[in-house]
Image (cartoon, rainbow, N blue to C red; front, side, top):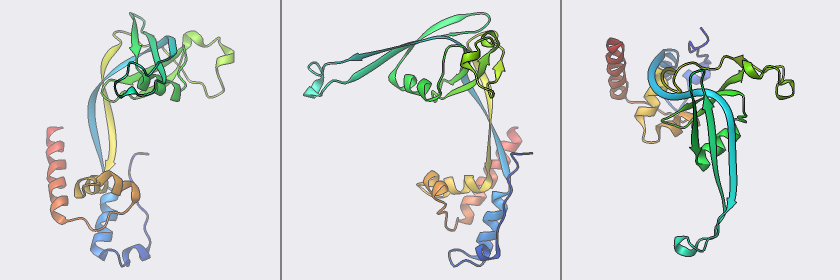
Length: 203
């Protein structure tokens, strides 16, 4: 499938001065072995009925340290399912996230409670007549049923090499993005292999 990792490499990568041939081949093989990690997370899923955002200018007189005041955003988000409707108070971070995803009334969204990440699933079928608010790529979805808050299973696809890098260095994630992985100790790989076997047995 599309989530199966595939690695291409050239002879010059194997005969590089930065790492041994064994290390280069081991990294290539572990880049080609994928692990699916299943995580259960709490989300809020519903159709956006209304978003109200108020911007007020706060004076800095009352703030400790005499800091200058700035713009303060507060808001309210109304979400609904076929069975219920709830109004949530929004903080600045959530307002920015909604603006970034260009969420408007009629969108069906999920909000990850742990991270605050917002995912737009599509437009509600009830808004399919609003021709001005849609493009050719607009995806229509049903209004969710049941409770607004629900538990969902999320699948993360990672390669063994990515797990190696993250666990082998203090700045693991940064090393992964920079591509500066260097040689990885065999003890680290052995620990990760043991952990993956443990995950597999747990199901």
